Length: 227
Image (cartoon, rainbow, N blue to C red; front, top):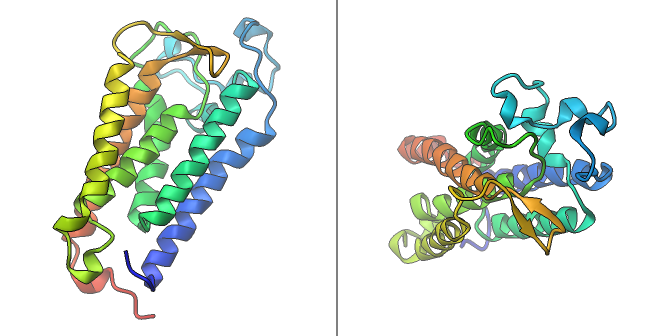
């Protein structure tokens, strides 16, 4: 890691933290959705904000983003906000690049697209899938474009990315996303969908792979700041 980040490094950190704020602030301000009630009994404003996988592509256009802001219990919300703070800190440590922010932003709605593969779900809300996408993006950045590349020590600094990526894959596969659609989480005080974590992981890897390979293949002078 460099002691004096370049202009692009600073821009990457600013955009990464701004995206964290865009994910976390609405989630913290919005009321909790009562999952003990049927979806038809939820407030009218909630209806277009929630993703309904059983409806396939027939979703309100906002739901691809807004469903991540809604939570089913206070523990569900606070655990995800804690995870978001951790990802924000990891982005700072890893010196998240602007392409990392773009990849995570694109993975946000793509995570919800992946939820359509579980049409057994009548509705899905929560931030955890998008958090897995963000963690996957950061891990892949450290593997493809280590933050120590300024000093020319590429290989010695890919190991944090490999560790994070391995931990993410192990965690998601241990949750058996191909099994039960919903499992009871005592920590979140609701039933959660393991598929959301798998969908987020895949969305983050796909988007990160595209953006980082494009970033890596650009001419060096196109990614160096003059500042």
